[in-house]
Length: 115
Length: 110
Image (cartoon, rainbow over all chains, first blue to last red):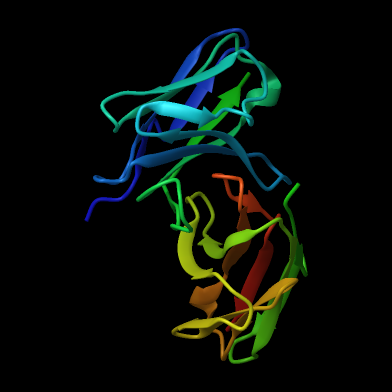
């Protein structure tokens, strides 16, 4: 079946501009996660959705970062007033549920470059 | 706070030369230890989940094992196509997120 998809695959933006990153999870997966992967760093958790609610936003680095999920499916991660330190690969993952030890399946990522 | 340390950072093998990758972890109430493979420019690909000490799982040339403090990913007779970064992650009892190590970059030369 179809895996997790993300768009765009690459995004180059100027410092100070806003960007939106999109994630389509695997059909039927109620849990959705955003992570960030920077050069030399491990994957860093950003936010978790169960359905349309976000019980854990603890990884969002600043109030410039926000995310929403609609219809229990598609999610959008928005970064306002982008800074150079926001340059990274943003990865989305989904799992059957947020509870239990279900594995998370990742999308291909969006590579964000802030110039 | 959950912590994961992977070693070595990089490993270079000759085709057919078996070896192991290590993942040491500290977690409160393990809900799962996960191994992923990541190829350049791609997202992590799920390999295994281990839930309790003593558990083992196998897939082709890969075998993952788990103790109370660490996990090993054993690679038997590797091929060049096994070259990738291997990531280990844990999920603790009160968390929904995965905490990842920085990975081991495996290169298998023909």
